[in-house]
Length: 213
Image (cartoon, rainbow, N blue to C red; front, top):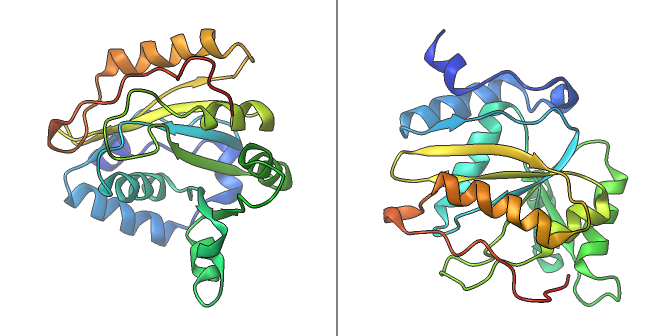
């Protein structure tokens, strides 16, 4: 088996319809490997899911996840403030996978993003669970409630800078029992011990007590 096959597994059948293109994929693979990074794990055979990504300690996190996804043949979606999508650069932000959300609307963020899922046949939404590059005492719960509302699973994933890996973990289907589901999520992240840039540790894998969307 070649290094490329080892690092970049085939795209699951459920995602073949949205393959980003062989040229872009090959270019991303070369860049990713030149940087010394590799992907550990595989994408799930699901057309829609949320990626709960941690740790988030650097602006490089998003770049590396984007490169990893493109290397695997897919485009990631991400959430951005609606003002980022105004002319003249709005088209480019959408091209990069951005999904605008307007916090001025009565419809909250969870409902807006769930509606975006409903309109699409395929969608991979990445959310930084810590919501900031600083160490925080609690994760934000939005990733969980978006997946629950949209009826899609959550893929656990994150970078490990010391070993230069993007690690793709298991799928968690939100049951509505957030405490039980968070125990599973915490167990995986704690077992993997992923570390951020310069070896920075991940924020504790827990939600604020009685936190809601």
